[in-house]
Length: 147
Picture 1 (tube, one colour):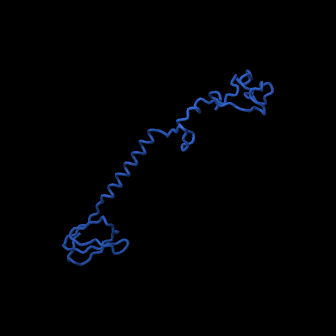
Picture 2: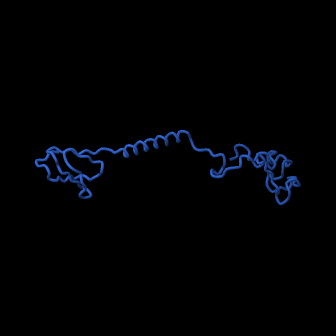
């Protein structure tokens, strides 16, 4: 903008921010929440708002973050080695790998003593139970397609 007199403060109706730069005047100075003042040193005054290095760096970090979101989403969901992501098994202990799960008691009696004849539910009579459970016995894994 142009002024007729130099040295006379000019009220600018724009909010002050440190990124404002002025040519041909002193300032800008904040005088109210939505106003700033410049004191012209020449008849032609130019106000310019420019981004600072911190502003540009923040935009770069924002764009990198958005890009990483797309990359991570494209890679798929995280698959944990354990059912609970914060629990870690002791990898040095190999005895857990060889152990099998076996029920200690079935229907109040040891699993070996039960012949399956009086078993209240199919599949609880042990491996010798017969055709009612498809020969699955006390296997804890359900047949494929049952879930």
